[in-house]
Image (cartoon, rainbow, N blue to C red):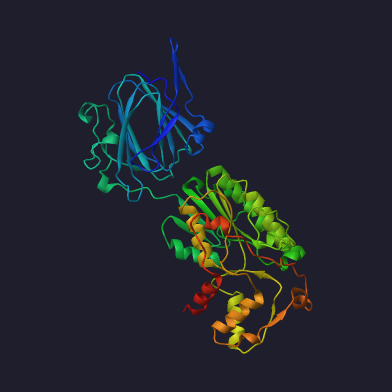
Length: 470
C-alpha cells in the first residue's frame, strides 16, 4: 500500500549525498497523484538543483526481479510509479566511504537522490512494479562506470528474496566483488592558464592529482565552434579561469583592444555557456581595475564597477557574464605576485644592481601572493561557500608601490631610501605609446572572504617569506 499523507521532507543517510525524500501522495477512490519532481519545492526543501535531462522507466513483471549494482557518472532521482521495491545503494566513489551500504524500501511515496558514483540496485517486492528515474546526463559509451556483484560478501546486502530465488541477469551475476571494483573518481577540475602565476600556485595546492587538468595557451580554444563538444564536460565539476589578457597598456591600442575583448569577454562568454549547460562551477579571476579608484575607503564586492580603461572594461564585462552562471565564484584581486617576472622581482634586481628607482607613490593597495589566491580558491570550493563575488588580497595596512619597493630594498639588505617617490602622472609623462589609466585606490575589503573561515596572510609577512624562499 502506498503511504498517503506524507509531508515533503528530506533525510540524510549513511552515504554522503544519498538523500531519502518523503513525497506527498494524494489518493482517493480513483487512485492517486503525486509531484514526482517539482524543482521549486524540492530545492527549497534542501535538495540540490541537479538539472535532470532524461527520464527512464524500468517495468518489472515478477516479484523478485533484481537489478544492479551499477554506478554511473551522473546524479539520479529514483522513485516508484507503481508497486514497491527494496533498494540498495553502495558507495563506489573513491574515498573514505567507499563500500558504505544503505538499504530501504520504496513505494510511490518515497524518492531517493543518488549522487554520482553511488551504486544503485533494487529488488521488486510486488508484481508489475515500475521503477522510474531522472538523470542529469545522457548515457554515453565514453562515460566512467563501475559495477559491484549483488552477492558481494563485504557489502552483505540482506536481500528480502534470496538471490538464488530471484530473477537476475547473467551480466549482473558476473560483476566483480568489492575488492576488484574500480572506484569512480571525483568530477574533474580544469585549470585554464596552468602555466601562469596562479596556475603554478594551483599546482602546489592540487598537485598532479588525476582528476585535475591544466591547460596552457593553445590547448583549448574558447572561441572554437566545437567548444561545447571539445570535452565530455559532464565529467567536470569545476573550471578555474586563471587565464586572461592582462597587458593593460597594450589594451589601449586597436589591436590590443580587440585581443582583450576576445580573451576577457568573448572567451569567457563561451566558457560561461559550457559551465551553465553542464552544471559546472566556474571560478573566474577578476581585477581591481573594474573600479576607478576614486573611493576613499576599501572597495566591497557590492560596489558598482566604474572601469577607467579598456582592460578594466573587459574584466567588468567578463564579471557580468560569469555572474549569470548558476554556480560561480568571481575572485577580485590586485597587485598579484607569483612565479616569474613581477614588481617584487624587478625591485629586488634593481636593489642588487645599486639602482635608485623612481616608484609611484599615489597608487595604494595590498600585494596578493598567488599562494594565498590559490588557497582561497581551494577553500571556497572545498567549503562549498555561497556562490558570488569575493575580494581576495593580502591583509594588513594598505601601501603604495613606493612603500612596497622600500620594503623589498630593506628585506634584501639594501638602503630603502634609494627609492624615490613619484606621482603616476610624473612616472608616465615621458612614456611613449598609449598608457592605460590606473585606479589610485586598489584596496579591497576582505570581510566577505574572512567570514567564510579563511584569512589571507598579512602582505608584509608574505613578502618577507617570498623574498627568503630559495
